[in-house]
Length: 263
Image 1 (cartoon, rainbow, N blue to C red):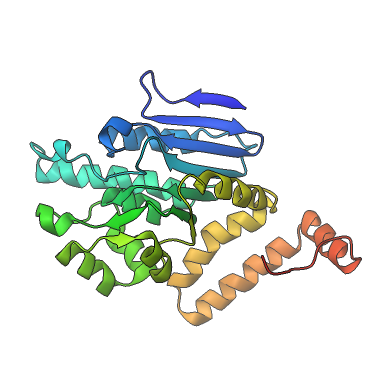
Image 2 (image 1 turned 135 degrees about the horizontal axis):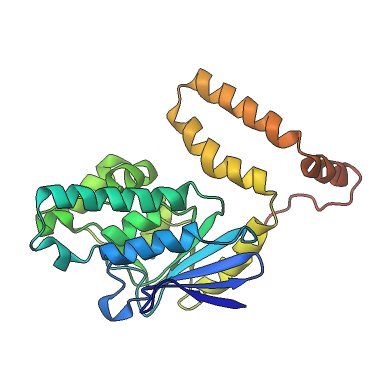
């Protein structure tokens, strides 16, 4: 396993084991609150992953995934600086969501505010039973600023987002799974094991298929039906024409590949 860091006193650590990278938010004394410097390090961590990495696991050090925006940075900031800050978050999360490698989140403890905005940009979300989800911006007198009004709304609908922001409703792991914030719920301490299992499956996919899933699928979801169907046909043609894809199809037809069975 290769251990990497981003920065001298890194708030983000990277460990690479063959085709899987584990990126860790490393500010446990602040419950992994996301400062501008930390978001910059996070962007750098994803941007600098070697081409050999085919899947990423993202988690938080300590007892929490992330308690959200580091509010201490808001005390003296101007409106213009706040807009620039949002733009920094947007670019960092865009690189994660529409990057080359699918990202699996291990969520535990607080997944709150900006932490939930980050989680919503990830592709597969595993919640340990300790995880809790909240959008306290209404109680703080502020508003979502890291893309959550778009991404979280797409996951659970604007009505649920509005209710969480207005009332401070905290969602536990079970409810998060029911409403679509989490794909899996596991016992405390078992998130990394489940993430590794899923990451190995994801990393075994052909890179072009993963690229299409990460980049074409969200685009299709935004398009009118006729545009979306045409985009789908193009991606289907491109992926199916790859020699590696033809070999996998032949392997299935020749009974050299496993059939789909229930988990």
